[in-house]
Image (cartoon, rainbow, N blue to C red; front, side, top):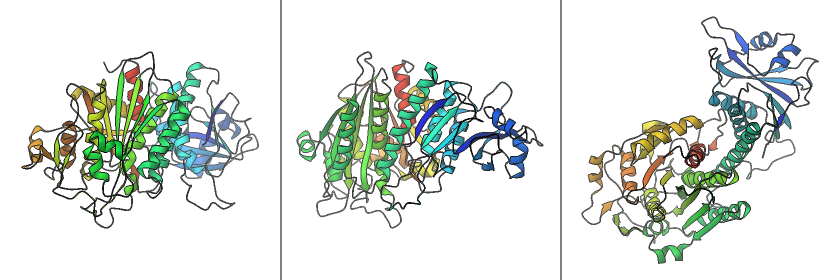
Length: 506
């Protein structure tokens, strides 16, 4: 994992393999390149002509832009890496956290193969340190566990040093600690998502959680297939019955003695989704190792909350199963008796995520938490509605849905509030069971949310995050987002836990 440190050293005197500075475009149609605050010493070493040099090299200050310039004799680092920050903000404004986070991520990705880089980006408050630290640590991520790494392979940037901060300042130190905890756990979630499904079975996933529980002093309970059968978890068992790798329900608990507020997080953990008997068509199976992204996000958020010592009780429920076709698999037309006692007619075995979540939601409801949030790569319909970068939010409380949307935006994650139209509930009526696991095709993401709502305990505030779009990036890396597993919603969940601890959510 990339190290993150603060330094009071000047940019001109610090020894590093690279110096990272920010550049932006001045407002107006004829706006030229401007060197952002934090890089004054670097500009001085260039004789005050750093912007002119970078413009000659093609820099325009656009977000996502990266430009390299050889350092003059006045700098210890051999080269300067300029990252675009977009348009210069107004005089009474500062560069936004997401702008800094993205710029730091772009820089870290561009510096693979180096040992140490000094970041001289704009820092006006502890929040800026946090954003730059997060972006750099997330941008430096690489998943190489299954690659034959030769001696010439470029490894991720080993150390990030932030200039312009105060190592002894309490708020600045806390910002670094939060950046480290969040990024390390988010990157662990990415590792899990990227791990091939032949290695990350439900049992293997549960073992990872148990090991982390011991490391961080968290209580972990694992229900195996025998315990699930004894407990009547028909949804989880019904999804996992077709696989040679049996399902698991994992509970990971962080408790803080000073706060009675209890937040429950529930994650869909389908370690591989073939679609079951309702087999997915060719071209839709290759990335289905990512169908446990919700469980990975919940796991990461609970551990990060524990590492930060948040004054809130957080329980994570990971509903883990492998959805495979076989002679023992659940068939379309079968009826499952869920943990809640309700019966569900399975019309499509590829609508399996809602089945495992239903059991976990009812189990979580038994503890009467103040709120439940479930996270899942649940429906292709949500991807069609919101695209690859935005997750949908549904809830049984409008204020709670709005709060989570605002928290996501504050955390740098794209989300959008979605409705739960009552008229769509009737489309899941079944002549055989209490309800079916499918309704009308149009609005399928909303139908899935309505299904989950049926399994939330009476009077409990609940929200559902459908992260099917942003959970796995099949395109090119960008900003601090790698190709493959992204760790979507971890930042939102952690910020939600912090807001709950602070009493900001009622």
